[in-house]
Length: 157
Image 1 (cartoon, rainbow, N blue to C red):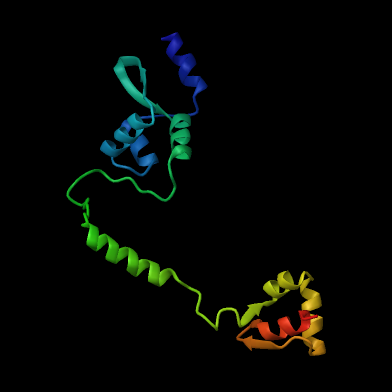
Image 2 (cartoon, rainbow, N blue to C red):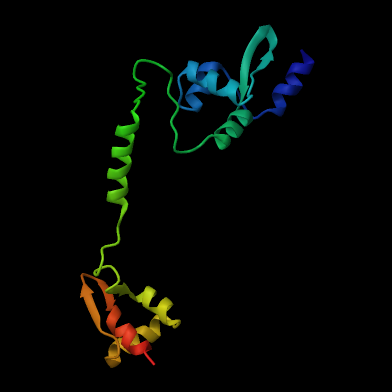
């Protein structure tokens, strides 16, 4: 009994299965599965009661990927299998939508920061060049864009 009190006093919190599951926002079955996969085991205290250390649960949380949500396997889980031709059609469609560069239009206008990078000068120099008329600007909403032709003319030898 004295040994158990010493151990319990050294831990910030001990939780029952239900509380530990709620602490991780999981159902009990998913929590136990996740804990076993990550080698997080409960502590057995007097009367064979199991408790989960808060410290161990915090370590488990830090090891988990943040974007993934864990769900219990069940009827709501659906696996989609595609044949080779469907997969190729899907890949072609996605790659077509990912192409963002439009010929002739994409390189015609550049931002102040991009202009500064291209010319190797600071942004304030770019604004001075605009004011002096050496660079041609186009205002779209609050954004100031520079015509690429005016940059090329200024940099031409």
